[in-house]
Length: 250
View 1: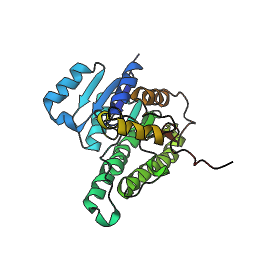
View 2 (view 1 turned 90 degrees about the vertical axis):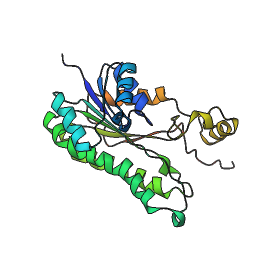
View 3 (view 1 turned 45 degrees about the vertical axis):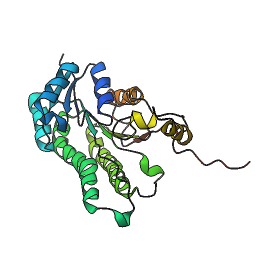
View 4 (view 1 turned 180 degrees about the horizontal axis):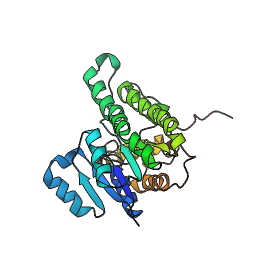
């Protein structure tokens, strides 16, 4: 029996670590892409510390997809884990280059990944696609136009892709976190170890805490191992009940 293959992008950041851990635990061989692996030492270190993974330093989406399918008969799961620093600034003070960079990393890059992968997915007539986006736009914050634009676009991309691939039996779903512990967006020093940050989280998030990486790993595992393809086109909010409905007097 051939080993199941998963491809995960940006494995060192955001949802990359729990995605890899969950998929390796489910018996997948994980093709683990990250820009940091341009450094051969970091690539070797990652491989040594993460059995069951094959770290890749390919950055071009077409080359990454071509490499994955050329070296394996098929790819069973594709996790597009897209991340870029959330730049908060009033629109009138914003640098348009920050907007371009944000859109390039969290919208254009996954678009190009899927553009290259779709013909191969259609040919193999199976495969689960999981895109990691954000639910931050459910309650926009002042100054958040740049990340909001990009993340809303990524969620729209998921819905469009699900329509295109549904006739081929290939589900496309998104996990949309907010208030998930990651050093990318909610670092431990600021929101767990710091009493002020911890109090803020307890007041804002109905669950009273940040989401744990292992918890989002459970959701990745579920979507990766679905046997059917009818669950598609969903943006699954992973935010501990945030945003809560405002309290109204009785």
